[in-house]
Image (cartoon, rainbow, N blue to C red; front, side):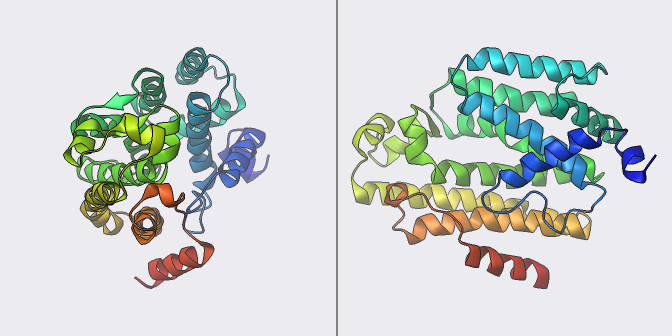
Length: 286
């Protein structure tokens, strides 16, 4: 029996599938950058494949999404009971057992997608942050679990970074989300700038008001990145560099939005390959 087979409990094919999923789906920086230790790559891939599956069911499935999410949770329940069926869950079961990862963080990610089927608008920023507790923060908590760093202080810093990443994504995808009938940004904020999510969804809005609103939300997003940044120096070096890449990638998205006139309707901002290279060099020389 090979060392790889021994380490992965004979789930090599399942882990390879998870890694393929992880390598096919990323936008700013790969979850499997050179900073991720080889021994953890299969397990990070398994977590990512689970997350990708949840998001695809909650956002892309043409059929009954609620039912599909329920089936995904049933697979999670079977995995924690020791009898996974789906290949992603068979790999994930090894990861969960080896690193003692908690059920509730996986379940929260499913719940976030169930919330997407229920809630279309959020009234307050506290409501938006509560959504992030389910949709984004569990990912960072699970990653810290892989590295043995899941203590309360570092979990809180991770939550700040993950919330910032989620908010940056909300800015990046605002027109698309509104077209789907969703608005993750609070209605109270729209009203503060004489905007309406319903009107924005139909025809946009006054450019000056949109710019003022965007700058307000962009600065609030950047505050979360600043709040979580100390985590990069409170974890093993390689994890810290990976976290720095995630943070800088999120900040770059916000920067791109501001550079295109602080208006998400001027095109979906992305991080260019050249900018990614600059950030990689910045991380390596920090």
